[in-house]
Length: 464
Image 1 (tube, one colour):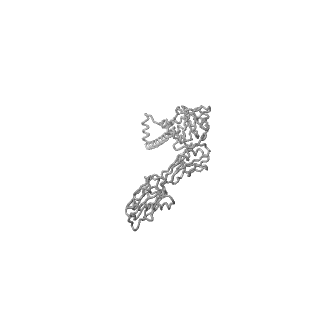
Image 2: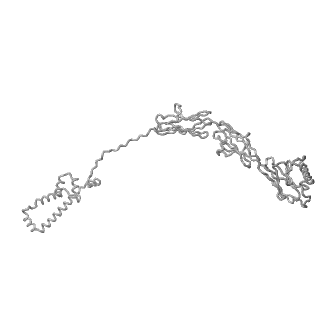
Image 3: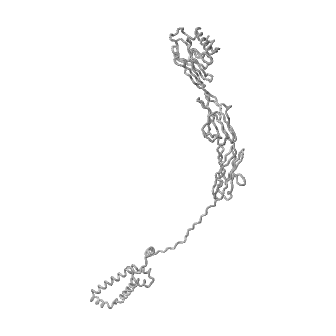
């Protein structure tokens, strides 16, 4: 009878189907199948010790439902799928043909239903039943969650649009629970909205951009998450095409001859542009000994440089930086003008020796401290009158000197008036010495200040 009841669906209402199912179980008990080993029944009867706990399991994992029974005695426990009214297990036996189903127990008290490799279709109610009369049962729910998965078909792919047009990005994802969709920029920059607002992210499956511009170009991430790992994302590249544009910081540049000069332009274009430099004759400037053009780009921006190694007179004039792509062409002009080289007067060094005069110390001191002429003679100055007196006394002394023959007579005169002659002679010598000392100190001064050379000669001869 048990084999006839396997995987059989009972028609009728839910209440009727449960009654039929209970009847089948009871019939199998009466038939003496493996349901019972002993017809004796405990007086108290079995009961459930705790309700079945609902279980949530991600798809692909194993789900375990627990049914705790007390005083089971000789009664049996069965597991059933409520929505399909399928008997899964009875006691230790698996009734269903589903190989993913298993049953275990712990001392006939805790009965565990195992569902391996859970699928989304396994979601639903499961019944733990005891074959008492009337039947005792309780129900637990199995929730199967599914991580998000982004659908390729309804989700936007890489887009190429013209600047100024409207753009709509879409992202669809499945999963259980229903995933949330978030938009972010891949480079981490803020998202620029049409009303000049900047936000870090935008929620929702649809992302609208009004009048897109070049600043909004880049890679966007559609991120789907529902709390079930892993979170998934899809990269959508938004490409904005626009005609070239050139920006020049200094359109008038000056340089001196021989100076190294660098001209600079900034270009923006997408698709990427062809960039080059020309002169007035529209001849492209190539890399060489004189000029060195260089270009560095970043997405749609290009920094153009033209280095002139040594500016010559022929290099002055206008230069053009040109940017061209499939949508258009533009150029910018820079004028290089001449700055005169500053001239400096040469400094000469004379090699003719400057004549120098070595003056006596007295003359150098005099030139620094020239005395003020005075009408009164100073104490150290010998006037003309004193000079005359000295000269006359010297002549008188010379004339009054006795000869050798008259030495004895002179000696007698000296002996007679010894005291007077000695006193007068000492006094005369003191006067002479004083005059000689004063004349010696001021002789140089008189030679410089007196115009009469004769007086100087007389004084010097008198002193000698």
